[in-house]
Each structure stands twice: as C-alpha cells, then as structure tokens.
Image 1 (cartoon, one colour):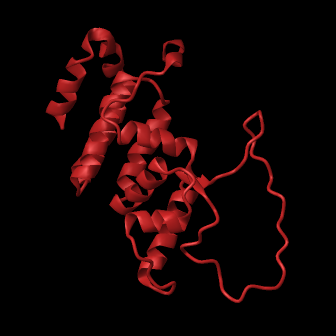
Image 2: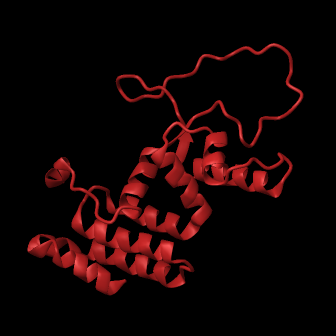
Length: 194
C-alpha cells in the first residue's frame, strides 16, 4: 500500500506537501494503517489506501469525517459495501430492487438470508450511511409525510424485501463512497476557501 500511496502522491507534486506533513493527516494515516493491518480482504485494503490518498490530496471532508470513514471500513464488510454500491448506482431503490440486483431470486421471509438482509439495511440505516428517500423543502429540511390511512389490519408483517420505500445514500454515505470507492476524488471548488 505504501508504494501505491507514494506513487500517486508524486502525481500531485509539491502542492500537497503541507497537508501530508501535518499532524492531523499523519494521525489519519496511522489509524488507516492499523485498520489496514487487521483487514482480511483486499477490498478493504484498497478502500483504506484510497482514504489515505484522497485525504492527502483534497480537503473535501473534515478530518473527523475521514476518521469515521476509516471506522466504517473496519466495521462493515463486503456485503455492506455491496448494498452501498447498489444504492449509489441506483438511488431510490427499494429493498426488493437492492436484493434482486445483488442476489437475484428472493428467499423465504423466514430464512437466514432474509434476516441477514434486514440486519444489513438496519445496520447501514442506523449507522447513517443510507436512509429512506424523503422530500426536502427549499432550506434542505425534511418534509413530514402525510399519514396514509389503510383500511383493515394486515395479516403479515412488512417483508424484508418490500418494494415501496426507496433508499438513498445519506450525505455521509455519498462522501464515504466518494472517498473510499474512487481512486482519486475530484477537488471541490470551495476547497481553496477552507
């Protein structure tokens, strides 16, 4: 990983020297290398390498957020990342669409696959990576949905693979994908103002 980081940094020249020599950046690198050393897959190692490189070459996210991304890379595994990628590529996908795209045929509701999928969605939702799609007003505030009155009481619980509630990446989730799953993030126009 170190050789790849060094080689990619050389492409940026001297403009990043101050950043990569800072104590804040070096703390990120130490943390990323500790997690990298414990990682059991190449995918996680690649993602951590991207974090180190992208955190050194751009200031699109605060260092506290980048620390969180390192934690998420350590905490989550490849099935989490598959769900994140699917929602990134197809925003507004329902749980049915996410499952169908990744795995194909639906299992029974009482299967361990269904339990695992509910766990993944709950894990990523409570972790702040994904959320159900919501309308916002002109100030970016979420608009309350009007309650829908249903007649009668359903006889079954909501399916693990329901097809009516669209999911999107939260802003942190989009930034996570941007920092970890892209080789080099693009510089933001407001970056020079930070």
